[in-house]
Image (cartoon, rainbow, N blue to C red; front, top):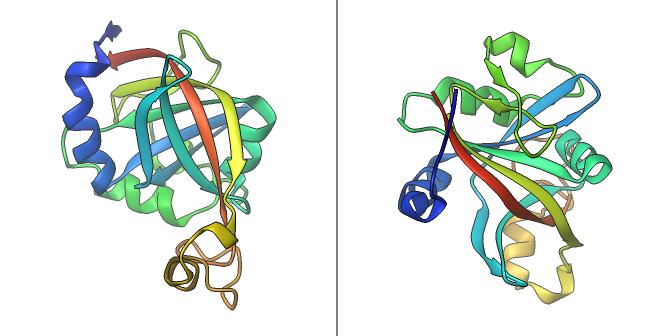
Length: 178
């Protein structure tokens, strides 16, 4: 069951959990791929409520979002999801079926084709309305060196040479999976 939620009443919780880790989930065909993130923003742009996620160009999730233009944001209501976040943040969906490996429960989307995840029940459904690759020349050298070391391969799960694409997802639905 999906209970509609007023996103504005959940903003503090979303920001708190984002700092600790949440999931961005993408899907193409039958392949569902959740990825752990701790970088993101919620705001208003073009008079629309937006969730902006930052995904490195070499990630499988990046490919799926680019191809489909949709994603869900899956936010835990408690802090007992460390195993899920750790696994989804260190394994690639190219190699592993994270849903199967973790035994996660998928809930069909209401406005997008990407499902929510019951174990992280606060769900934002998003449709990409804009995307842009970060401009390395526009960021401080300190950040380029710390987060984008050019001597670290793209398949390393943490800081590596791939820059992020900013995906601006209009939040088209918000609900709690019960």
